[in-house]
Image (tube, helix red, strand yellow):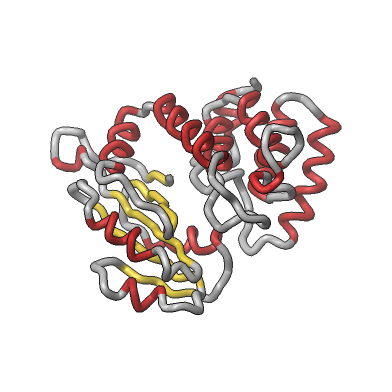
Length: 248
């Protein structure tokens, strides 16, 4: 999720912020129709749907053309680039991402907007932790599928709110540095998790481990398709979180 400054005084219909829902797809023709049908049933007063076709070779774009959504077609550059493309095109105060094989709850955006308006980060953490639990029990192929791991969002937002110890545990598990996860659920060498865990090590004063992680991070960043400035695009304060929260 990405947010923009709120201009509403909370007394007008702007109390429901406009939300841009971004669906990124690569060869998702088999499932995307169900996703778009589900989005059509979402109960929310002000939202748009943007579909980014990341260079698909199937008929995703033809399916999307049947729906009242905005379609953006790009060359195949990967999920991170597709998400950035959707974010740049968004007009909402909040940008929310959904996978092309997901079935959104009809009240999903209302829950999201209410938590956002309240600044209820603990509710957000609880839901992300539940997402991690559910994700851990999904049947995954190896190599891992194109779905974004919820641990990346959980770790980034924990860091943003100063929960460094828990964030470090989340990233260690995701990178396969402990025995929390089975191999198909690990994302060894993943640039997002490396960025997050390197920051955790620095903020916890683990100098030697931080140096080792930063070496791995530099190697991963060298082949990344976009610049990586934070451990998840949902994070709002990638550069100065240490100044905002201090060390944990």
